[in-house]
Image (cartoon, rainbow, N blue to C red; front, side, top):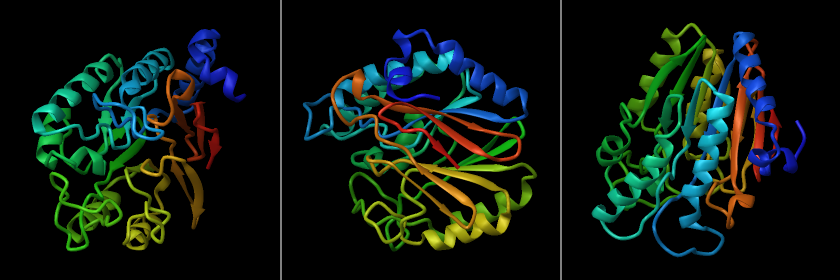
Length: 286
């Protein structure tokens, strides 16, 4: 697909049918189409630097309208859905407002927990507010198996909770790794893994510090066709031992719909991955 005009002004150029065809074609070939956004950071407060918190509901509404046209199998937010304004009461109000927008989506909705989702809340509070089954979980979609990881743990493997963490100190604990290994072993289909922090950059500030241990599990399974995350607002792409790692650009960056960022990901039956970006999100191929 082409670049900025066909996606940044997507809803105004009449190309929705083309994107819908991408999703339908992927499904017809036994593949999978996924709507993806990340780092909306919604809260009812003034901008800070390049983050325009109050613009996120309108940006998310554009994502919802676009995905209701394309009809992917499901949609997922890769964390930092919300941001901090004051206390738990204000956080709950912000979450309720952004949830009302996401709820207009006509396909199943999924969530990954990000560190900013826990700046006031505990994990149970965020799980209850979104209807997630658990902080980490898995589900099947067509012939594919999808895994949602939670890396919001400190080095001592204690949970992030109500701001009790350093965002650069992020780990996947042994119990979750054990669950992941068992989940990968029992599934028969190709797998897509979703997480907030980066699994391909343990040396960087945005990276999961024990990422090599997690990557080893993914590689040994022979089933993982892609890992998709947020957290690093600029986005990035890498490939490690045959697995592509897609870091999606943040929705919150920049004012107005012209600075929106989201994507339609399509995974073919053979496991090849394509990211069709909208707005500031670039296209990628894995």
